[in-house]
Length: 66
Ligand code: SF4
Image 1 (cartoon, rainbow, N blue to C red):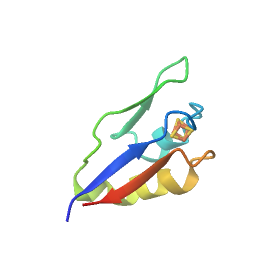
Image 2 (cartoon, rainbow, N blue to C red):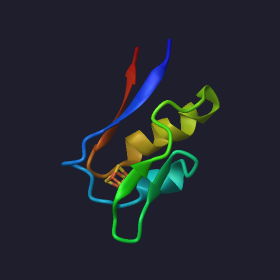
Image 3 (tube, rainbow, N blue to C red):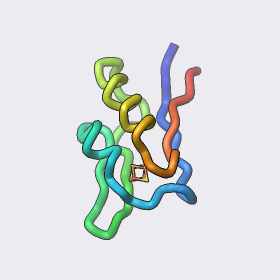
Image 4 (cartoon, rainbow, N blue to C red):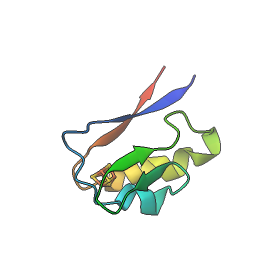
C-alpha cells in the first residue's frame, strides 16, 4: 500500500513546523510558501511526516493511503 501527502493550500500559513519535522520532504520559502519536495516519500520518512502532520498548527497536511 502506498501513501501520499496531501496539502490544503487554503489552510497552510507557512509556519514551517513541517519542515522542522521532515526537512527532506517539506521546505518553506522565506515568504512562507510551502513546497512538498516529494508527495510520495519512501517509507523510512513516514515517521517524520506523521510528526509533521500531527504538529502542523493549522492541520493543513494529511496522509492518504492508496
Ligand atoms: S503545512 Fe502546516 S506546518 Fe507546514 S508550512 Fe503549512 S501551516 Fe506550517
